[in-house]
Image 1 (cartoon, rainbow, N blue to C red):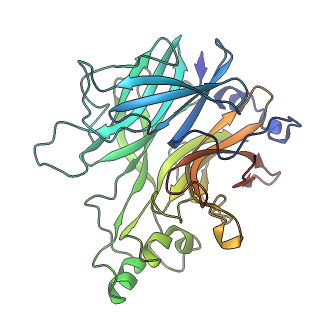
Image 2: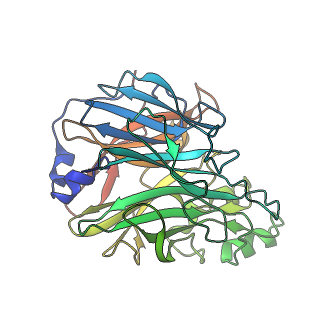
Length: 361
């Protein structure tokens, strides 16, 4: 059996549960200092397990909860201090899936095989455990695959026909792109070039041993400044924050025969980090971005205290309520990334709505 948060009820066509009358609430922000959070509900232990970036230098820690309010620190669940470890630093964005009685962690790290001494030499690997709190042991002594450029933010979709798909982000590093926003930034004397990260998808072998075929480019920042997405996806550039544009932190699910890909844009370290989504009739696209993007963004410009909202995943709780799990910052808590949970809804026309960012005691 596969457990991937919303996987089972998506396949059963139960999206009406988004309108559940569940009284479950979250306490935003949670007392969990994670970036890139991911929550797994495990039926066997009847508990929620949260994984994310941070908490330990060379690996990952986890938290568990029975009610999504109180979270218990469960210690280190993965460490690079093991025989098969291929990563050296920057352990990021873990996601954990249950399959065949085992738990599989997909994560990003800096690959030690680096003959050209690249500053960003990231790849995606897989570790496994018999328990959601580990210890997770690397399947092999190498990353899952090497596309020839740095990649992060692995996300896996389990299709109804048994196929598996891996989604990831090509890093901005050494990927300068010609676009109207790049030309504008150069004309303004801001930056000589703009680097971009792009989201790709590729079929994944059922035993997680390799990818099948060549990756497909699915999402990238707009080329034209007239594109409806250009304003919000280019804020890190237009604000003078950094000479990069991102599409990263992808998360895929299916509803009414339509594939939804949620993604984050802008610099994760700044206030403009925000979430949008795109849809397609095929898990490998082509995807069309929503005209209502962004669906989750800072509220400090409207009297709120939250900024840097991004890298989300989804969780369906035991009562049928679906949560958008993401990290953000507040003016009260400073620069540290903290975890937020806000409700996600799908309107009758298929539009996604995130009820947030919210701050609750």
